[in-house]
Structures are given as C-alpha cells and as structure tokens.
Image (cartoon, rainbow, N blue to C red):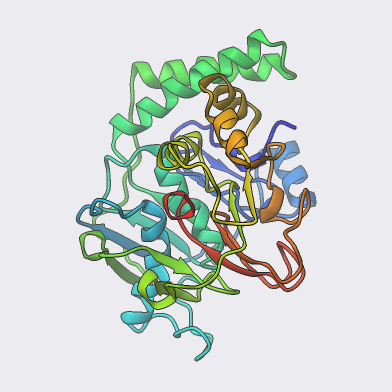
Length: 338
C-alpha cells in the first residue's frame, strides 16, 4: 500500500547517486541507476557494488521551450519520433534499428527543469530499451527537490517507519549536501555513440504512443476521432501535480465521456495529500475509481480494463494484453487524459 518502488526511491536520493532497483523503471532523475533482477539487487544491497559493463551514451539535446498546451509527456513521445526522423531508429513496423538500445541516455538542455518532470524523461528510458538515463540539471531544482524530500523523510521518521537509523543517516547526508551543494558535470570533450536533438518549441500538438507499442508514436491529428472506452491516470509517470491538473481541467464537468475513469496516486503520501486537498474526493464524485497506490493498470496486476477496450493511459507501456485482454491502448499526458 506504500506505492511504486521507483516513485519512492526518487524521494531518497542524493545527487550523483549510483543505484539499482528490482524494476525496469528504476531510473533516477538525480544521479543514475541500473535496474536489475532481484538476485543482483540483493547482491548490490549486501556488498554495495554490482558487476556492470558500462555502455556507451547517446546525447539527447532538448532545445527551446514547450508551447502552451503541450506537456512534457509529449516531449517523451517526441524522442523516438525525432530519432526516426533523424534516421537513428527504424520507423515503427519497418525494422529493428534503435540507437537507444542498451545505451545510456544523457539528457541536456533543460537545466531548470523540476526534478519531478525530469523523472518523466529518465523513467521513460525503459521504453526506449536504454540501459539507464541521466539528466543535467542545475543546482536550483535539485536543491528544491532535496528540501521537499527532507520533509518527507522527517515525516516517515516521525511516523515510526522502519529502518529509522537509515532514514537519519539519509537526512544528515541531504542536509550536508544542501549546506555545500555541488554537482558532477560531463567532460566537454566526451564522445557519444550518437546525438539526438528535440526542438521542444516545434511540438505543435500532443504526441501519443498508439496501440500497442511505445514506439508507435503519432501526432494527435493522425488519430483524432478514435473512440475511447476507458481512461487511466496513474503509474510512475504520474505525480500529484498531474492529478491536480486533471482535477482543474475537469472542474465543472458533470458527466464523464468514457465508460470507466481510473485514478491511481503513485504513493501513499501522494494519496494522503490529494485526499486532504479534496482532489481525489472531487474526482470520485465525478465517477472516477480511486485505486490503491501502486502500478495498478500499468502492470494489469491490481485491476484490468474490459476485454477489447480502447484505452487512453498515462502509464508507461501499452504491450498487448497488459492492461486487459485485447485492449487497444494509447499513451499520453494527464492533460490529454482529462
């Protein structure tokens, strides 16, 4: 009931951390992480190290600023589209070339991006088949995130959470970093396997991953008019801020346009905050099904959509039968879900 492992881990980080976790989406926006099977994670936990052949990196340069009405999730889906247009990835259904496969994605060009949003970029590295992802952020957003994390760590300590000694050590380490902040930076002459550029200002409409593959990306105008039966707002790609946005966009709505509307906060603390703010209550009054914090429909392990349903989801993956038998799943932003 605590929620998604990697959503929690991103509240426990120090800058320049190298970590691992037993889930493919353990991708840190602060530092870098390498997901692994449970045996290797246990090995790393016991010994403080893990065997790793360091792969090459692909530099992803994000230029410009998003237009009003375009979400960062659209930039996530723009990445494979840009690689296809630059000849670095096969167009969907036309081959298997993929410059990101088994490499590290190094994002640059948005140093002021809030860490919660940076997590959307690094988390989605799993869908690019990348080994890991890291992002060059400035001290300002990193410090802001760590101050917010401190409040959560202290709250857990006050609640009598397990491993209090570890929490105290982490609190002390975060406080020490905030007193003398410093970040690693790459060498200016670093060599990359390839460079992919994404012009955020050129994104004129939302971009979706279409049924049933995260690389089957299309602009909204290409799929306009498709029937949607169910909507899911949840998964590790979703934050409390996304759910507040959905609540705001649906204000004044008195009837849902879909058969079922699923809402799943990523962690217990997110759920408790959103309950106090009235966000989840308003969405429930509208007809949303509020699910227990966790992966939920993204994994298809807590709930399932109807067989053959057409779904719009904010989750990470839309593989065949993952959400429901025969389901056709589009992936995109919380704004578009609303």
